[in-house]
Amino acid sequence: MSFKSLGLISQLLEAVNKQGYSTPSPIQEKTIPIILEGKDVLASAQTGTGKTAGFTLPMLQILSQTQKKKYRPIRALILTPTRELAAQVHNNVKDYSAFLNLRSTVIFGGVNAKPQISTIRRGIDVLVATPGRLLDLENQKALSLARVEILVLDEADRMLDMGFLRDIKKIIGLMPRQRQNLLFSATFSKEIKQLAQGILHKPVLVEAEPENTTAEKVNQKTFRVDKGDKINVTIKLITDGDWKQVLIFTRTKHRANRLSEKLQKAGISSAAIHGNKSQGARTKALAGFKSLDIRVLVATDIAARGLDIPLLPHVINFELPNVPEDYIHRIGRTGRAGASGEAISLVDVDELEYVRGIEKILGETLSSEIIEGFEPTDKPSQSQPDSNNRNRNQRRRPKNSGEGKANNWRNKNRRRNR
Ligand code: AMP
Image 1 (cartoon, rainbow, N blue to C red):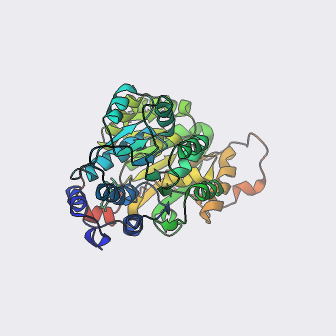
Image 2 (image 1 turned 180 degrees about the vertical axis):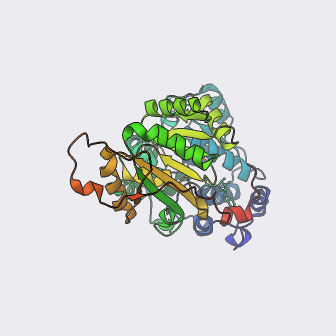
Image 3 (image 1 turned 120 degrees about the vertical axis):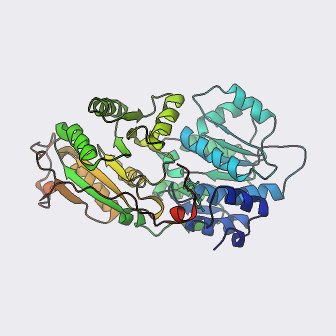
């Protein structure tokens, strides 16, 4: 399958070629022709599947083929949950529209709105935005959504998790009823289905990969440890395994900072990324992590959302998320697009309950191991049923896993420029 056979025009083929992509990813094969037909799409796809090009390429084609000459109202709106994702999506939009006469921009909070407003005033075709700043600027009459023809909700599940439902509804009310809607989500909860029902018109359902693929290609392990040993276990895993690029998740900003400091004290370069960090600090941390100058990035769930870090070999859940779906998002950061990766969860006695919830949505039991020298002795803070221990702990040292295997569509087809 080639991009040409999907019906893309030459300017887009040229742009795709310039990116070094030779073959469409599975999600792109499915979404591009459907979107070009003008249909609504409900797609299940995680970051790393190539979903952004999956909706951006056909969207740009439609816009360029129906372009009105002088006047440029906002004709396409891409909503994303986080600033990082908005910036990344906009970079893709710019890359893919390099040979088209279309203008785009991105707006998000935390930075001065004035330059954003003046860019929009000059006329743009595609707007990438986070919901809060978009509504701010709309309230100030700095922009109008009255001519939007295509709406994309990217990472819709995360937008709902972050409490953007009301904002999304408000935004929808500002757009014409007649429009094409594309909803991308990593998970399909009841809430997402409800949202989709309210927004999409006869959507075509697209799945990036059969269910459970993420779980299959990620080597998942849990280590039963005491809460107080987690930092030392983390240091041991990274040092013994000589891991060069590790993403670690904590539940709170405070713990992200603390862990990052402890790692640095242990001689492991590290940065924390979370909602209290300025945009500049987040961008700097991410750049350092991508270029391997920083070995460990410690992140909270929300901050990590949408980070574009291809082929991450190691993810550590320093603390398990209390929402099981977040576990899927987290481990989706490793073993992406077909490559293998390792996701390790450090589980203390109070988190056994979370493991159960995760196993339920995964439909499988996670292997549980104990690290020599760090045998757990802790008692539950609240009373926990005996069955939590499950008698399936094995005494084994952690094995170091290999780096991601280069056997996926992206590695085969793309000149990597990291
Ligand atoms: P996404 O899932 O949209 O975040 O994309 C993940 C990564 O895959 C991005 O770095 C894209 O540049 C890259 N990518 C998207 N489509 C292709 C393709 N057809 N071939 C190779 N790489 C791609």
